[in-house]
Image (spheres, protein in one colour):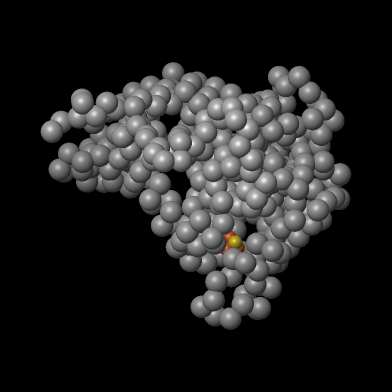
Amino acid sequence: MLRTFITVVNENGIPVHHGVPKDITKYPDCMQIETRSEKVNFNKLQKRLRRLTGQAIAAYNMIEDGDRIMCCLSGGKDSYAMLDILLNLQKYAPVRFELVAVNLDQKQPGFPEHVLPEYLASLGVEYRIIEEDTYSIVKDKVPEGKTTCALCSRLRRGILYRTATELGATKIALGHHREDILETLFLNMFYGGKLKAMPPKLISDDGKHIVIRPLAFCREKDIARFAELKEFPIIPCNLCGSQPNLQRQTIKGMMTEWDKRFPGRIESMFRAVTNVAPSHLADNRLYDFSKLVPRGTPVEDGDTAFDRETFPLQFTADNDEETNTEDAIIKPVNIMDLPA
Ligand code: SF4
Protein backbone atom coordinates (compact mmCIF):
# COMPACT_ATOMS: atom_id res chain seq x y z
CA MET A 1 0.00 0.00 0.00
CA LEU A 2 1.43 3.37 -0.97
CA ARG A 3 -0.14 6.22 0.92
CA THR A 4 0.55 9.92 0.84
CA PHE A 5 0.74 11.72 4.13
CA ILE A 6 1.00 15.35 5.02
CA THR A 7 1.93 17.45 7.97
CA VAL A 8 -0.04 20.65 8.51
CA VAL A 9 1.26 23.52 10.63
CA ASN A 10 -0.58 26.53 12.02
CA GLU A 11 0.52 30.18 11.69
CA ASN A 12 3.04 29.68 14.51
CA GLY A 13 4.65 26.76 12.75
CA ILE A 14 3.22 24.26 15.24
CA PRO A 15 2.13 20.93 13.71
CA VAL A 16 -1.61 20.51 14.08
CA HIS A 17 -2.15 17.46 11.93
CA HIS A 18 -0.26 14.59 10.45
CA GLY A 19 -2.16 12.11 8.39
CA VAL A 20 -4.25 11.58 5.33
CA PRO A 21 -4.82 14.56 3.03
CA LYS A 22 -8.61 14.38 3.14
CA ASP A 23 -8.55 15.57 6.75
CA ILE A 24 -6.84 18.88 6.04
CA THR A 25 -10.15 20.59 5.31
CA LYS A 26 -10.44 20.78 9.09
CA TYR A 27 -7.57 23.26 9.11
CA PRO A 28 -8.50 25.93 6.55
CA ASP A 29 -6.05 28.51 7.95
CA CYS A 30 -3.10 26.18 8.12
CA MET A 31 -0.62 25.14 5.54
CA GLN A 32 0.78 21.88 4.37
CA ILE A 33 4.53 21.63 4.88
CA GLU A 34 5.42 18.10 4.06
CA THR A 35 4.22 15.36 1.77
CA ARG A 36 5.77 11.96 1.78
CA SER A 37 5.15 8.35 1.00
CA GLU A 38 4.81 6.08 3.98
CA LYS A 39 4.94 2.76 2.21
CA VAL A 40 8.03 1.53 3.99
CA ASN A 41 6.77 2.47 7.43
CA PHE A 42 3.43 0.84 6.81
CA ASN A 43 5.01 -2.44 5.81
CA LYS A 44 7.23 -2.43 8.89
CA LEU A 45 4.37 -1.50 11.14
CA GLN A 46 2.14 -4.24 9.76
CA LYS A 47 4.93 -6.80 10.05
CA ARG A 48 5.62 -5.78 13.63
CA LEU A 49 1.96 -6.04 14.66
CA ARG A 50 1.60 -9.42 12.99
CA ARG A 51 4.79 -10.70 14.57
CA LEU A 52 3.89 -9.53 18.08
CA THR A 53 0.41 -11.01 17.75
CA GLY A 54 1.89 -14.32 16.61
CA GLN A 55 4.28 -14.26 19.56
CA ALA A 56 1.50 -13.60 22.06
CA ILE A 57 -0.62 -16.38 20.56
CA ALA A 58 2.30 -18.80 20.81
CA ALA A 59 3.37 -17.69 24.29
CA TYR A 60 -0.04 -18.38 25.81
CA ASN A 61 -1.21 -21.15 23.47
CA MET A 62 -4.15 -18.95 22.55
CA ILE A 63 -5.13 -20.73 19.34
CA GLU A 64 -5.19 -24.48 18.78
CA ASP A 65 -5.94 -26.67 15.82
CA GLY A 66 -9.66 -26.74 15.07
CA ASP A 67 -10.52 -23.63 17.08
CA ARG A 68 -13.50 -21.55 16.07
CA ILE A 69 -12.75 -18.04 17.26
CA MET A 70 -15.39 -15.44 17.85
CA CYS A 71 -13.78 -12.02 17.23
CA CYS A 72 -15.65 -9.33 19.09
CA LEU A 73 -15.84 -6.18 16.97
CA SER A 74 -16.89 -2.91 18.54
CA GLY A 75 -16.11 -0.74 15.54
CA GLY A 76 -13.07 0.74 17.29
CA LYS A 77 -9.48 0.69 16.04
CA ASP A 78 -8.34 -2.19 18.25
CA SER A 79 -10.93 -4.75 17.23
CA TYR A 80 -10.59 -3.87 13.53
CA ALA A 81 -6.83 -4.34 13.81
CA MET A 82 -7.26 -7.64 15.64
CA LEU A 83 -9.54 -9.06 12.96
CA ASP A 84 -7.26 -7.87 10.18
CA ILE A 85 -4.20 -9.48 11.78
CA LEU A 86 -5.98 -12.74 12.65
CA LEU A 87 -7.28 -13.05 9.09
CA ASN A 88 -3.71 -12.76 7.88
CA LEU A 89 -2.37 -15.24 10.44
CA GLN A 90 -5.11 -17.66 9.47
CA LYS A 91 -3.53 -17.93 6.02
CA TYR A 92 -0.06 -18.80 7.25
CA ALA A 93 -0.49 -20.35 10.70
CA PRO A 94 0.57 -23.96 11.13
CA VAL A 95 -2.80 -24.71 12.76
CA ARG A 96 -6.22 -24.50 11.14
CA PHE A 97 -8.80 -22.28 12.81
CA GLU A 98 -12.02 -20.50 11.87
CA LEU A 99 -12.92 -16.89 12.52
CA VAL A 100 -16.36 -15.45 12.99
CA ALA A 101 -16.69 -11.72 13.57
CA VAL A 102 -19.43 -10.60 15.94
CA ASN A 103 -20.74 -7.13 16.63
CA LEU A 104 -23.35 -6.28 19.19
CA ASP A 105 -25.58 -3.45 18.03
CA GLN A 106 -26.77 -2.05 21.36
CA LYS A 107 -29.16 0.36 19.67
CA GLN A 108 -27.36 3.45 20.78
CA PRO A 109 -28.69 6.57 19.08
CA GLY A 110 -26.84 7.30 15.86
CA PHE A 111 -25.17 3.88 15.61
CA PRO A 112 -24.34 3.49 11.91
CA GLU A 113 -25.78 -0.02 11.40
CA HIS A 114 -24.59 -0.39 7.83
CA VAL A 115 -20.87 0.19 8.50
CA LEU A 116 -19.80 -3.15 9.97
CA PRO A 117 -21.93 -5.41 7.74
CA GLU A 118 -20.59 -3.64 4.65
CA TYR A 119 -17.01 -3.83 5.87
CA LEU A 120 -17.24 -7.48 6.92
CA ALA A 121 -18.98 -8.50 3.70
CA SER A 122 -16.17 -6.82 1.76
CA LEU A 123 -13.66 -9.01 3.63
CA GLY A 124 -15.62 -12.16 2.94
CA VAL A 125 -15.38 -13.21 6.59
CA GLU A 126 -18.21 -15.03 8.37
CA TYR A 127 -19.97 -12.57 10.65
CA ARG A 128 -22.97 -12.10 12.87
CA ILE A 129 -24.54 -8.81 13.97
CA ILE A 130 -26.52 -9.18 17.18
CA GLU A 131 -29.22 -6.59 17.76
CA GLU A 132 -30.17 -6.11 21.40
CA ASP A 133 -31.51 -2.85 22.76
CA THR A 134 -29.39 -2.74 25.90
CA TYR A 135 -29.28 1.04 25.56
CA SER A 136 -32.97 1.36 26.50
CA ILE A 137 -32.62 -1.12 29.37
CA VAL A 138 -29.69 0.82 30.79
CA LYS A 139 -31.45 4.18 30.41
CA ASP A 140 -34.52 2.74 32.07
CA LYS A 141 -32.75 1.11 35.01
CA VAL A 142 -29.93 3.53 35.83
CA PRO A 143 -30.96 6.83 37.46
CA GLU A 144 -30.07 9.99 35.54
CA GLY A 145 -26.55 11.18 36.31
CA LYS A 146 -25.32 7.76 37.51
CA THR A 147 -22.72 5.86 35.53
CA THR A 148 -24.23 3.38 33.11
CA CYS A 149 -21.15 1.34 32.23
CA ALA A 150 -21.45 -1.37 34.89
CA LEU A 151 -24.91 -2.53 33.84
CA CYS A 152 -24.20 -1.97 30.14
CA SER A 153 -21.04 -4.10 30.28
CA ARG A 154 -22.77 -6.84 32.24
CA LEU A 155 -25.57 -7.06 29.69
CA ARG A 156 -23.12 -7.00 26.79
CA ARG A 157 -20.99 -9.72 28.35
CA GLY A 158 -23.98 -12.01 28.85
CA ILE A 159 -25.12 -11.53 25.24
CA LEU A 160 -21.65 -12.21 23.87
CA TYR A 161 -21.24 -15.38 25.95
CA ARG A 162 -24.62 -16.61 24.75
CA THR A 163 -23.65 -15.82 21.16
CA ALA A 164 -20.36 -17.68 21.52
CA THR A 165 -22.29 -20.76 22.63
CA GLU A 166 -24.78 -20.41 19.76
CA LEU A 167 -21.98 -20.07 17.24
CA GLY A 168 -20.07 -23.04 18.65
CA ALA A 169 -17.06 -20.81 19.28
CA THR A 170 -14.22 -22.40 21.23
CA LYS A 171 -12.53 -19.06 21.98
CA ILE A 172 -13.63 -15.44 22.31
CA ALA A 173 -11.06 -12.92 21.07
CA LEU A 174 -10.93 -9.37 22.42
CA GLY A 175 -8.87 -6.50 21.03
CA HIS A 176 -7.15 -5.35 24.24
CA HIS A 177 -3.53 -4.30 23.84
CA ARG A 178 -0.46 -3.72 26.00
CA GLU A 179 -1.57 -0.31 27.30
CA ASP A 180 -5.00 -1.69 28.27
CA ILE A 181 -3.20 -4.33 30.34
CA LEU A 182 -1.00 -1.78 32.09
CA GLU A 183 -3.84 0.67 32.66
CA THR A 184 -5.79 -2.11 34.36
CA LEU A 185 -2.79 -2.93 36.50
CA PHE A 186 -2.59 0.67 37.74
CA LEU A 187 -6.35 0.99 38.18
CA ASN A 188 -6.32 -2.10 40.39
CA MET A 189 -3.35 -0.84 42.37
CA PHE A 190 -4.56 2.74 42.78
CA TYR A 191 -8.25 2.11 43.36
CA GLY A 192 -8.71 -1.61 43.99
CA GLY A 193 -5.88 -2.52 46.36
CA LYS A 194 -4.87 -5.46 44.16
CA LEU A 195 -1.86 -6.37 42.08
CA LYS A 196 -3.91 -7.53 39.12
CA ALA A 197 -3.83 -6.69 35.43
CA MET A 198 -5.65 -8.11 32.42
CA PRO A 199 -4.47 -11.58 31.40
CA PRO A 200 -3.78 -12.50 27.78
CA LYS A 201 -5.89 -15.64 28.24
CA LEU A 202 -8.53 -16.48 30.83
CA ILE A 203 -11.64 -18.45 31.61
CA SER A 204 -14.73 -16.24 31.33
CA ASP A 205 -16.50 -15.33 34.54
CA ASP A 206 -19.40 -17.66 33.67
CA GLY A 207 -16.83 -20.48 33.63
CA LYS A 208 -17.82 -21.62 30.13
CA HIS A 209 -15.52 -19.89 27.67
CA ILE A 210 -11.88 -19.19 26.99
CA VAL A 211 -11.19 -15.53 26.30
CA ILE A 212 -8.01 -14.54 24.46
CA ARG A 213 -6.31 -11.19 23.85
CA PRO A 214 -4.11 -11.69 20.79
CA LEU A 215 -2.94 -8.04 20.78
CA ALA A 216 -1.56 -8.30 24.32
CA PHE A 217 2.02 -7.53 23.17
CA CYS A 218 1.07 -4.73 20.72
CA ARG A 219 1.53 -1.05 21.45
CA GLU A 220 -1.57 1.11 21.30
CA LYS A 221 0.12 3.77 19.22
CA ASP A 222 1.10 1.17 16.63
CA ILE A 223 -2.48 -0.03 16.45
CA ALA A 224 -3.77 3.55 16.14
CA ARG A 225 -1.35 4.24 13.29
CA PHE A 226 -2.22 0.96 11.59
CA ALA A 227 -5.94 1.74 11.84
CA GLU A 228 -5.35 5.16 10.33
CA LEU A 229 -3.30 3.79 7.46
CA LYS A 230 -5.77 1.00 6.75
CA GLU A 231 -8.64 3.49 6.92
CA PHE A 232 -10.83 1.22 9.01
CA PRO A 233 -14.37 2.62 9.16
CA ILE A 234 -14.21 3.58 12.82
CA ILE A 235 -17.48 3.92 14.70
CA PRO A 236 -17.37 6.57 17.46
CA CYS A 237 -17.36 5.12 20.96
CA ASN A 238 -19.34 7.89 22.67
CA LEU A 239 -22.74 7.21 21.15
CA CYS A 240 -24.20 6.08 24.46
CA GLY A 241 -23.56 9.57 25.89
CA SER A 242 -21.77 8.11 28.90
CA GLN A 243 -18.94 10.12 30.44
CA PRO A 244 -15.50 8.65 29.86
CA ASN A 245 -14.11 6.74 32.84
CA LEU A 246 -12.13 9.49 34.52
CA GLN A 247 -9.93 7.13 36.52
CA ARG A 248 -8.87 5.30 33.36
CA GLN A 249 -8.37 8.61 31.55
CA THR A 250 -6.10 9.78 34.36
CA ILE A 251 -4.01 6.61 34.20
CA LYS A 252 -3.84 6.88 30.42
CA GLY A 253 -2.59 10.45 30.72
CA MET A 254 0.01 9.40 33.28
CA MET A 255 1.31 6.66 31.03
CA THR A 256 1.39 8.88 27.97
CA GLU A 257 3.39 11.42 29.93
CA TRP A 258 5.81 8.74 31.16
CA ASP A 259 6.23 7.42 27.64
CA LYS A 260 7.30 10.90 26.52
CA ARG A 261 9.53 11.69 29.47
CA PHE A 262 11.01 8.27 30.21
CA PRO A 263 11.38 6.27 27.01
CA GLY A 264 11.45 2.56 27.79
CA ARG A 265 9.37 2.77 30.95
CA ILE A 266 6.23 1.29 29.37
CA GLU A 267 8.26 -1.58 27.90
CA SER A 268 9.89 -2.21 31.27
CA MET A 269 6.52 -2.17 33.05
CA PHE A 270 5.06 -4.63 30.60
CA ARG A 271 8.02 -6.95 31.04
CA ALA A 272 7.40 -6.73 34.78
CA VAL A 273 3.88 -8.07 34.28
CA THR A 274 5.38 -11.13 32.59
CA ASN A 275 8.15 -11.52 35.15
CA VAL A 276 6.60 -11.72 38.61
CA ALA A 277 8.48 -12.76 41.76
CA PRO A 278 5.89 -13.95 44.33
CA SER A 279 8.66 -14.52 46.88
CA HIS A 280 9.35 -10.77 46.77
CA LEU A 281 5.81 -9.60 47.24
CA ALA A 282 3.85 -10.14 50.42
CA ASP A 283 0.95 -12.40 49.52
CA ASN A 284 0.91 -15.49 51.73
CA ARG A 285 -1.48 -17.18 49.32
CA LEU A 286 1.10 -17.07 46.54
CA TYR A 287 4.16 -17.78 48.60
CA ASP A 288 4.18 -19.57 51.92
CA PHE A 289 6.47 -17.37 53.99
CA SER A 290 5.72 -19.43 57.12
CA LYS A 291 7.60 -22.43 55.72
CA LEU A 292 10.81 -20.61 54.79
CA VAL A 293 13.97 -22.51 55.75
CA PRO A 294 17.56 -21.61 54.91
CA ARG A 295 19.03 -24.20 52.55
CA GLY A 296 22.65 -23.18 53.02
CA THR A 297 23.24 -22.47 49.32
CA PRO A 298 23.16 -19.12 47.54
CA VAL A 299 19.80 -18.21 46.05
CA GLU A 300 19.82 -17.07 42.47
CA ASP A 301 18.45 -13.53 42.19
CA GLY A 302 18.09 -13.59 45.96
CA ASP A 303 17.42 -10.60 48.17
CA THR A 304 20.47 -9.19 49.90
CA ALA A 305 18.17 -8.25 52.78
CA PHE A 306 20.43 -5.49 54.12
CA ASP A 307 20.99 -3.40 51.03
CA ARG A 308 18.44 -1.63 48.95
CA GLU A 309 18.36 -2.83 45.37
CA THR A 310 19.90 -0.48 42.85
CA PHE A 311 18.45 0.24 39.47
CA PRO A 312 19.55 2.10 36.38
CA LEU A 313 18.75 5.78 36.89
CA GLN A 314 17.02 5.99 33.60
CA PHE A 315 15.73 3.67 30.94
CA THR A 316 16.03 4.64 27.36
CA ALA A 317 14.25 3.10 24.43
CA ASP A 318 14.29 4.02 20.83
CA ASN A 319 10.65 4.91 20.37
CA ASP A 320 10.70 5.62 16.67
CA GLU A 321 8.68 3.81 14.05
CA GLU A 322 11.10 0.94 13.80
CA THR A 323 11.14 0.07 17.50
CA ASN A 324 9.83 -3.33 18.48
CA THR A 325 8.29 -3.77 21.89
CA GLU A 326 10.47 -6.74 22.63
CA ASP A 327 13.52 -5.06 21.16
CA ALA A 328 13.29 -1.86 23.18
CA ILE A 329 16.77 -1.05 24.30
CA ILE A 330 17.17 -0.58 28.02
CA LYS A 331 20.44 1.10 28.80
CA PRO A 332 21.52 1.90 32.32
CA VAL A 333 22.81 5.43 32.52
CA ASN A 334 26.12 5.70 34.30
CA ILE A 335 25.87 8.19 37.14
CA MET A 336 29.37 9.46 36.27
CA ASP A 337 28.11 10.49 32.84
CA LEU A 338 25.32 12.66 34.17
CA PRO A 339 25.73 16.43 34.07
CA ALA A 340 26.51 17.99 37.45
S1 SF4 B 1 -19.26 3.73 27.53
FE1 SF4 B 1 -21.42 3.46 26.93
S2 SF4 B 1 -21.39 1.64 25.62
FE2 SF4 B 1 -19.48 1.64 26.77
S3 SF4 B 1 -19.89 0.42 28.59
FE3 SF4 B 1 -20.29 2.54 29.14
S4 SF4 B 1 -22.46 2.81 28.80
FE4 SF4 B 1 -21.86 0.97 27.69
